[in-house]
Length: 392
Image (tube, rainbow, N blue to C red; front, top):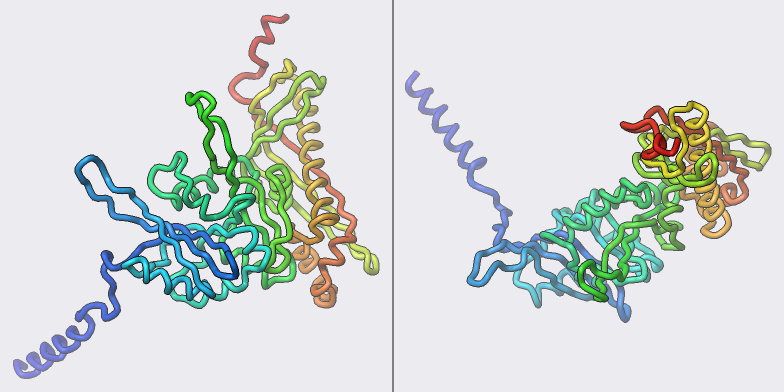
C-alpha cells in the first residue's frame, strides 16, 4: 500500500505542477493602460481616437495626481490608430473596462460598420459598452470637459445617462443593442446623444461654462446616421417602445387656468396590425399608470371628476407627443424607429416573410392610430392644492 500511495502522491504533484504554474499570458496592472472611455472621430481621412485612461492616484506634495489621463492617437484604420498610440504611451491599452464610446456626427454619417468590425473581432472589447453620438460638438471636446466631474469622465457620463432616464427624454443603447437592430429587419437602430450647452455658472457673475446633457437620440438607417430626435420626441418614442419607466408629463388643468404634473409610474403598449392588400393599419394602445406630482391650477383633487379630467388631459398630451414623433419618423426620417415591424412579424408571420425586405416602404405609408389612457390612483400626501381652503 505504501508503494501505491507514493505513486498516487507523485502523480498528484506532477498534475498540480501543470495547473498551478501560473498564467502564461498574464499582464501586470502597471504594464496596462486601463481605458474607461473612448472618443471616435475622423479627420483628413484618418481615424482619430482619444482615450480616457485610469491613473492610480498617488499622494504627492501639494496634492494628488489626476485620477485619469487622456491620450490621443490616429491612423489609417482603427486598429492602426490603436497600435500607433504605443509610440507616445508606454502602456498597452486594455479595452475590457471601457464603459462608453462617443462617436462624432461625421463618423456616424459615414457609417459605423468599420468600427464595429474592429470592435467585435478583438477579444477584450465588450458588446455591453454603451455608445453615444456627440451632437454639435466633437467627441474629444466632450471627453476633455471636466465640468462637475468627480473621478472620471466614463463614470460621470454613465451616471448622467442612467439618471437622465428618469426624464424619459433619452435612450441608453449598447453595442449589442445596435447590432441586433442592424441585423434585424424589424427596426432601425437608434443611439443616445450627448450635448454640450453653454450656461451661466451660479455664483460666478456673468461667467459661463459648458455643461453636458444626455438628451434626445440619433437615428440610423442601417449603420449610417440620418438625423436626430429631441428630448420630447425621444419621450414619445419611449412611450411606444415601453421604455418609459419614469418621467413627468405636464398638461393643462381642467379649467385651463394652470398645469398639472403627472409622474409616470408605469407605461405599457399594445399593437394591433391589420393588412388589407398592401395597406397597413396599426393601432397603438398606450396605458399609463401615474401619480399626481404637482398642480398649480387650484382644482379640488378630492373630486373624482377632477381626477378623471386630469387623466384625460394627460392622455391627450401624451397622444400628441407620440403622434408627432410618428409623423417625423414617417415624413422626415423615413424609417421605423419603433420596431413596429416586430408586431407585423408576430401577427402575420407568412406575410412578413414576403415583405420584410421592403418593410420600411410599408411603414412610410402605414396608417397609424394612437390611443392613450391614464390612471392616477395616487395624488400624494395632500388631497387639495396648497392654500385652497384659505380661498374658500
